[in-house]
Image (cartoon, one colour):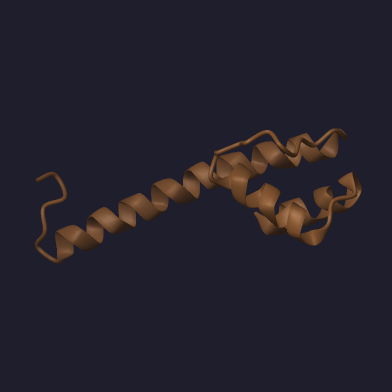
Length: 77
């Protein structure tokens, strides 16, 4: 996700910390709206980052549930 946003942050003129912040906020699908991409390639990369964040969040949740099941803990109780 960071590899996607660093070129977009450079084209938008953002600093490295701003680009990382935007990646984190977009990847977690929070979207505060304080930083918005304006050029054509940046919003496209932001969509890729958003979908990647959804997939990664789902994977983390699935791995966590499997770990709880393996430990004998029922996550539904």
